[in-house]
Picture 1 (spheres, rainbow, N blue to C red):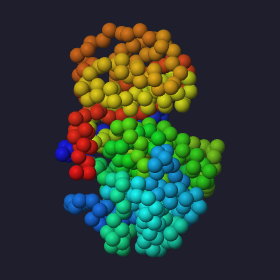
Picture 2: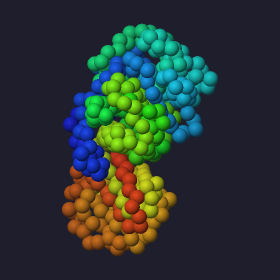
Picture 3: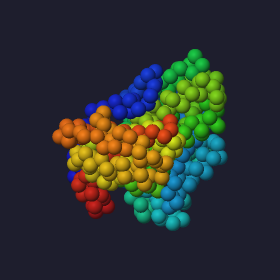
Length: 424
């Protein structure tokens, strides 16, 4: 059994690598319904084992037309739920979402698309929408068909409202220990706009969209091309820089709904408002990404990997992701073992351009290597640092101005024990 997780979750790691002093503060009590014009609701249908305050079906709807964009798993063994969602988003009419948790709807043949379409039709009818205005997220065990009898009876019991965001965040959980929601606010064109979001995932998470679902809403009026570009850029630097266990899920998606209810003039690419919107979206996504790692299966320690001085931004991402996903680094974090060679080795095989004579490495603020030369350090002091619940690793490559940050968690006996009996 995984030990219970406290709701006291420090977020300083989210802010310290943002590089901005005027970024909007995180509203930790915000949800997907904090932005104007969004409603949500949930129900317990019996897909998951019963417990108090447990839900397994959720609906999120914009009360007005939306611009909706998405980023999806790169796993080629993809869920029909993701395929149908992509099709409907591309058609340009989506303003609603139905999510079920407990069953992935993956690896079940043609029946997967049949069930996804029926679920979408049922949810659309419940929300007063057309099926083409609704998308679907499913998450859970692969190789099992959706329990349509439970879904058919559960969806009609869902009542949506402005206060339904917190329950919706709980309805999308599988092995997560806590829900993960937040919001940010900023001013665009003299109007206060809000971006809200929730995410789930505590295992089967690895860069390239990770079993992770993230749903973001905003009442900002944003042109579709900018919205799509913003989501792609932000996901690359946040959700795609998260690693828990090196496994890429079949069902991942990040979807962003923008309904314009704040009343601002349309935000276009290249404007100051566009930059402010992207930065705020990044702040929220960064926070939710770190929350995913904090809730990792069997883990109570997280670490950030900051890479600076890379030849390019993409090289920095490659190096940071390699360190964050290294099982040997994860094991060292678990044991508070300053075996720093594992991190340097991961940088070396990451595919990033590296000049070994210019690499510097730090654990928190303690220099371990400078310009390719190891530095004497007090081992017991570093062990004490690494015993904290949050650890920071910094790699300075010294050959450019590219930078990136990734998030990882310790690899524990608890993770192996939990996942060795996941379906039994």
